[in-house]
Length: 551
Image (cartoon, rainbow, N blue to C red; front, side):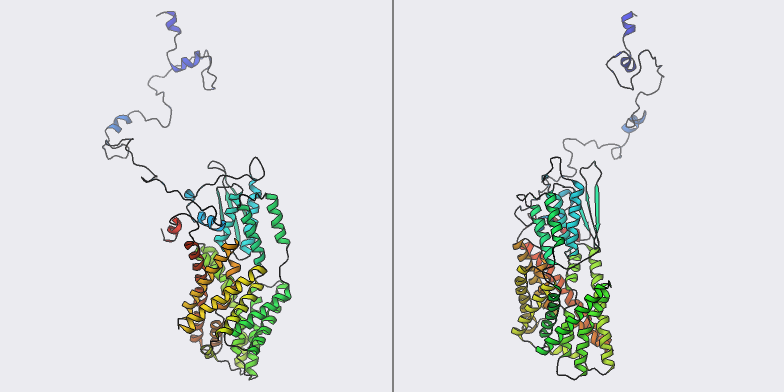
């Protein structure tokens, strides 16, 4: 063997030894001889097939899990995930209101949501993620505290994040907790922030201002920066309510008086119900100033109207005492929370719906305790209150329509609505009672079905008005359902229980619950019909329908 052949490398180790360009730390240093062990495999990868398995694999039958079928061909392999017709592309109508676009995306599976191009508002390096999440949570807090449904709150939070270019965000809304998670990419850690909603108050003027802010954020031509959004949010918190306290007290009295006229009262009944409701309102404000929970506030507020009705019965005054008490209950029934709770349940937010309905139940129990306490002592001292008076409500179309409009007007003031929306909700309340009276008193249809149809029209018209003004639908629907609230059924059920007629009382209370559910379902159904008929959202079939079928 020649000297040149002796210097020729005979293996990878030798090649690595004599190659001066190799700088890997795993290379064998020059001059170090490594003896090869005979019989040892050079393959050290954990993916290598062990020695002896090749023959065993070749002997495996065709049906083995470790062997592909003989007829298998890569060219003719079936598609794993993509159907033969391709994946249908989901498109959104760009000129639709942001509520519908975001709601449509939230109802889609995450993998099927259309991706938007990220938008950088002010910083070249991208949005400040923690500040965007904080702004999103603060906006969601104002919406949830104002009584907005959980799905609408999630849609608003989703819209704020996407307006600043945060695509992979997932908002979560419960009754008292808001959280949002943003993942920059599939390989980066997610960023999560949360906020607790400790106080809830009714101010639809602030609610409308928040909706305008979100609408400006989602508008590509507005270019609202983070600092400007924070400034507008701080201005909303500093703004005072549009109506002073004395106006709210007068509105509470006007609502109770109008409700008493709906159930057959006259001028004297109107005045008595209004005085009782205003006394209850002032007592509730007094307890609120002392820090007592709302349960006790509702209990005390329900007592003055019941006491005035019992006083009329004891004095043997020719006045419908039942109408006085019924009118006072109208100002206390939690219709807003009931509609929001049922809406959350219908849209799949069962935890939030359960919490809202539990809150409604507590308020209702508080009203029951307050009224039953007064009625019990009134019956014991000789007060004659007739539960059968519920069957003798006279039908006065013109007077009742005007009373329903006054009721909706005063209810809108109690909800702190903007003055520009009060006229619309007043007309919507008059339409609701007109439909209910035509179906129930004229056509003879059951009160539950008549209430459901009237509430459906309220939801339909409210949604149309909200879309016209790019605002929330709550200011146009909540006050309009006031004339439909089951005040008389609640009162006569409580009166029957106070007179030891428990069976009759439970039947009347069950009717009140049925009417309340009919109102809530009707309002939600009317809003969904509005979105469905106007074809705003995703093109074609709504894919989110699978979520509520149990699989």
